[in-house]
Amino acid sequence: MPVRDNIVDSRFRGMVVKISLVNGDELEGVIDDVSRYELGLLVREDLYIVFRHGINYIEVGAVDLHGERSDELEDSLIGSDFIGFDVEVLLINNRRLVGRLMKISRYELGIRVEDKGFIIPKSSILYIRLRKF
Image (cartoon, rainbow, N blue to C red; front, side, top):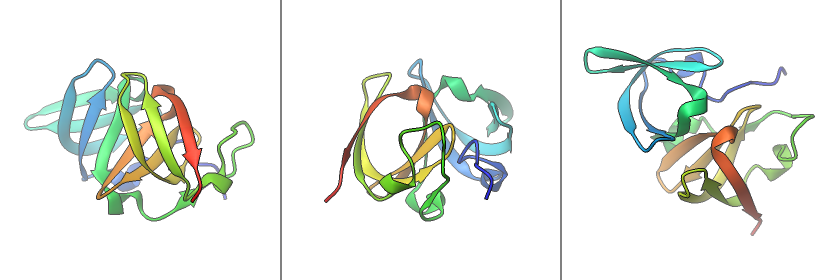
């Protein structure tokens, strides 16, 4: 199976999401289109092109993480062996997310926190603390 670059791909078109940006702004809208490095987000009558490197995280419903999935990544320490671990993620804006690691792609991690899912670009993460219970 080929390695996915991003968890947020064409399957997310039409989905309502909340995006937290690295500058502290938040956008809520419908994903209109996706590419490797950008997301098209329709917010009311405006279309935003959001660059993935500017995203802290994307908030979706927990079920929108579509179950557990990981790909084997040769150039990454975090791989399929860590799916299901309880994690604490410290983001570049000092926000902490505590939940369960559900998905891994080349550039993003999917974390379930209670009834919400967070898709986090690896570029927005300072560290991950892993705990297996």
